[in-house]
Image 1 (tube, helix red, strand yellow):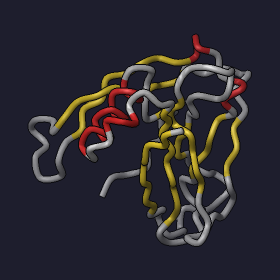
Image 2: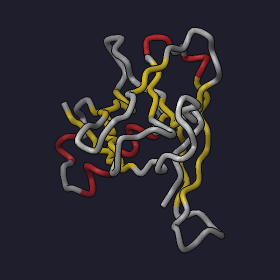
Image 3: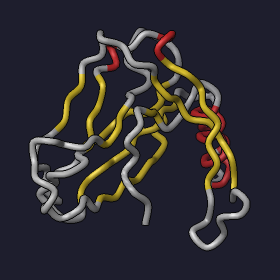
Image 4: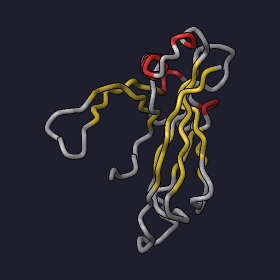
Amino acid sequence: MRLPVEAVHNDYTEGTGPRRAQEILAALGRLDLLGHRSAFVNLWRPIMGPVHDVPLAVCDARRVKPTDIVDTPIHHHAEQELSKPRHSGEIQSARFSAAHVWYYFSEIRPEEGLLIKCYDAPGLGRARFVSHMGFRNLAYPKHFTPRESIEARTPVVY
């Protein structure tokens, strides 16, 4: 079990989004889709609820400038093997900006979920990356049940 990430991040970068889509499509034998526009979406939802502590917050992508984003190395470890990474990659971290606008769903329940676009191919000015994080919600006392959530990431091919 991993704890919620309390740092502003996005799961893909300009380089890792297309590379991961290519890896998945190749593994599925769908090389015919490689020339198409691809994106990644993340479905996040709580397992237990409602969520009071460390809810998921998303930043309005229209308010994030390219200079706010920093590509950041990340190392993924298997739960049983912490001495060396299973694989390494890159995510986006975000610098603070007073221009950022954040949203979260108060007391989200297991039958609800958030669909977050974490990567989209370049073009047309649409939101390509959505920064997100868990945060300590000081509006709730500490006696609430800790957050348990699950997420699934999947490529979308247009």
